[in-house]
Amino acid sequence: MNDDLDPSLDLSEQVHQLLCATPTGLAEYDLIQQLKARHCTHIPSLPLTDHLVLFRTHFLVFNALYRLREQLWATQSGYLQISALSIRLLPYQRGCTELSEHDPLRDYYLDMSQLKDTDEQDVAKLLSSFWSRMQGGEEQRAALELFELTDCALALTPATIKLRYRQLVSLHHPDRGGSTERLQSINKAMEILERYYGRP
Image (tube, rainbow, N blue to C red):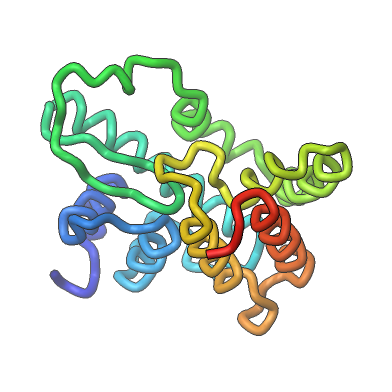
């Protein structure tokens, strides 16, 4: 594979190429890193340490993933498993009803107004809502949402949670230009999830 992706290809086609080259699948973080390393022009080239840049990058990648899933399904050429920890191409299976069921995440990521209408203040509110929900007694759900594991296709095991924790710490550590506030939220969420799911 060439180092650079073909800039004439749509982001969903570029993602498809990378996933075809990695049959075991990729975590979202790894997929973004591969796109950036191959000079993808469809996502921001700025560091992911900025909350708004991170949100926009995540949104664009998931928009591409849901569009790719629909394209593969329409042509009966495959099925795309989508979660933050595991994005993987699977063989097409006739009779699967998953795409016909209402999927609020699909609706959200395919609505480009969500990207345009979300600003830095909105992203900050999403982060602060984590703390308010925790104080209101919804700590387990708030922690899972912060880790983006509420709709994860993988089993919620201590090992899965630890892997996601390491990815988030790597992304948001202050030594790499990340936010101390965000890192504190991640550490707090990990403490909560260890109470519910145990340690690996």
